[in-house]
Length: 550
Image (cartoon, rainbow, N blue to C red; front, side, top):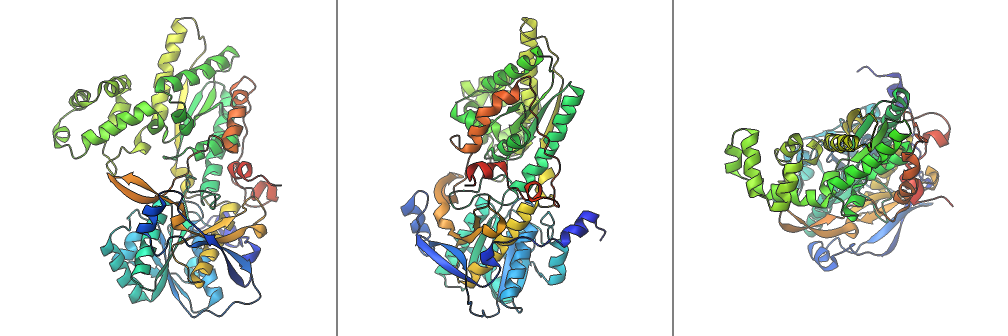
């Protein structure tokens, strides 16, 4: 396989780790925990793994020699930079404890565990993937581990391979499934531990114990480089407004972090839109105000950042989408209609009056996207809705009205972009390479200590890596009950952008300055791997604002 010079150089990078993970380790246990909400319901569902203590790893002068074990690893859900380093950390940690330990990768995600598709991960394989992006070492998948028959099939496979622990690398849903699996195996006394690792570029898997999910740092730096490049072009050509949609369905963490790194003229935050009960018209009016003000200063260009999930946070749009979800669920009558016009008329007859009026006001292309095939849960596929085009069309109409009434004399030419897949498999930043390797090493120590139903965590992430704090958090501690597909289910609580938090407050304090005629763009440039620490090893602006150094 041919490799670029950077690939070759990165293979030799040795990730930095917390001091506690560099030698012999002991576990220190804290007080018992409880779930973030719905204590009785969560405890009833997880009687064997509820209430366990938070644990931290500390340096020790002694550590007992562990008998040889076999461990399985699963990559679950969407890709995030650093996944390969979690597996590298797992492998190295296992071999350090006992050279006869073996690591098996289940192929294609959780389905590999059920179907018995696996590969032993040897030093030769691992060395090819150190410090690389992607999940291609074993592949990933979105199969949910929820059914008893799945657990039993996985148990058969584990017994065949002599596996006594499984590490699931995934987001909130994947780690919820890890917790369910851990509870089942502990209840049945199967002798199989389950440990999770926090992954998602969306940044919404975080709480008091998880400062950030891995992949968020690298993805945001990749997107911010692209935004900076676009802003430099805009400031050079001085003729386009760029509407840029950014990945992140359920929260606006990516949009906020990229705004902090690049200082665009406008950054929409879904959670703020919801809190202010804003309509599409309100959003369009706010954008137009900035465009008109800049045009008066002779600046007919700018950038607008748009979170992927914005449309679901607009209260009226959310009601419309829910009505459409209910209407189109297994609706054979709708499916049998031919032609977009017939489908559009059918929908208008079935919607409530407010939703019908909103649906009529939408551009036809967007209205059609709202009625496309649903996801496996029966919900609209938000990533397929081109919100940036919707806003461009509505802003264009409003500006035409303003111009006709003598309130706007500028030019409005646009470009639209969607940044998503560009960041999911990037070569991990030094931060993510170090963080992920440390997570893998931490998972090994939790397994060695006999823990199950825990998520590996690393904290104090704004300090140098040697000062990071490694440990484990019971997954039940992060759970609450939510309605999914009409049923109440235990899930890890998603973290939305905190409108009282330091990162959003910083945006709110500076957005007027970034919007005005004194263009304040920052050009972050590409991810740097070699050079001074302040260039190469810095975490996200979000982390630095949330956890300021003393």
